[in-house]
Image 1 (cartoon, rainbow, N blue to C red):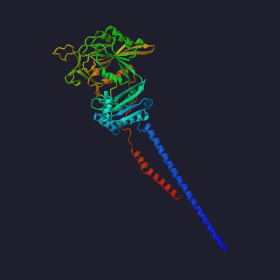
Image 2 (cartoon, rainbow, N blue to C red; image 1 turned 90 degrees about the horizontal axis):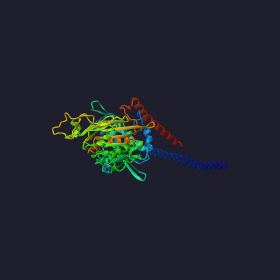
Image 3 (cartoon, rainbow, N blue to C red; image 1 turned 30 degrees about the horizontal axis):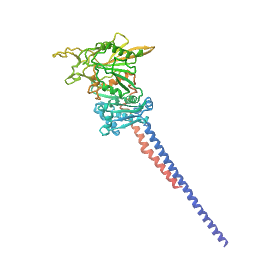
Image 4 (cartoon, helix red, strand yellow; image 1 turned 45 degrees about the horizontal axis):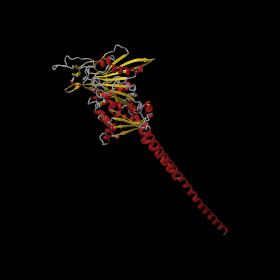
Length: 530
């Protein structure tokens, strides 16, 4: 009996041990399950944090991986450094919806007859724009549809360039405080200026040969954010003509334009970098001419410029023209007359057109641009007797242009009219030395006040004001252009081989799925055996 009781006691003890073991096993499983849940939560948190950090970095920095041979979609290191240092707020309006920008630019370029890797250059332009904003958060890119109502506000605010705005153009703007004053500047970049082009020998095909976008866009950033201000004095006496278009252009590009009411009562203030004398119909006195000379000499420091604008409506101006003759300019009476109907308006032979070509002052992006002006006074240039002066033609006229005499008879014809190498714009430079350093002053002569006042100067294809701005910047020593190496895209930049395709197919279609499935099976088995 006692043996039986012993067996029962042992049985009851074993049962009790089993009961005690059950919660221990359950606790262990619960502990392991909690660990797995905690690890899963930690992994999810890490993934979320990494995603947030990656998104923030992507929005702030250009993290795109450029696999092209010559880094076609990457802004140069020098340019990135310049962009990072911009400390003024800048808004760049891109005139197209963002999702269609590259497509619209490609369509427009193709429609205008451009050849080459148009699609790649259009995409490159879009990528560059985004990169500018990622490099510096002071720069904001705003894509705006020119056909939508909000464009009206932009056009009204920047009315001086609104008529020249076209699809995919860039309007670079900045507004900031300087010395207690609000400075507001803007610069319009035509999409045609984005690219370097080449025209075939027959003039039929224009091919995009490289991208200028880095240079033109960063130059515009410099223009709208620069704290350096230049001063231009406009002489308003002697019945001169208005310079409104030119003045507005200057004021939008770091210049202050002020009126000089008289040369009789006082010398020209040395604060002026440039003085403009636009088409006076009354001659200057000898004293006034001497004041012009004194301004250009600047107490022996030089570094000043005069822009003289002529007109065929002027009479005789002996004192002024004698002064200008010393700088290499000779003025004829009469009006320039274009005999080729392809270079004047119908019935307006005196409104002369000529193709804009690149020169030392201005880079013209293609052969689609031209200069136009009416009432052009014949100006010839010749080397002055003093070797310290050098004079050059910046823009000339067609060889089919002749002089229409001031008192031409009714039976006048162009057959035997006077011809010559007349200049539309010339620049004369006086050079002297301060020690070993060259110092200069300049006198620029233009053939007509209509060059800055013609009704067509707002057209995107008329390059009159482009020349005036580049010329002004050259005269004051401003950084008219910040130049970086053009980005040239070859048509075969990236061509995947059959081997490339097979490797990619094996990695993403076979290897990656197998690894994922194997990992899933392993985790399932481990979890089941817990």
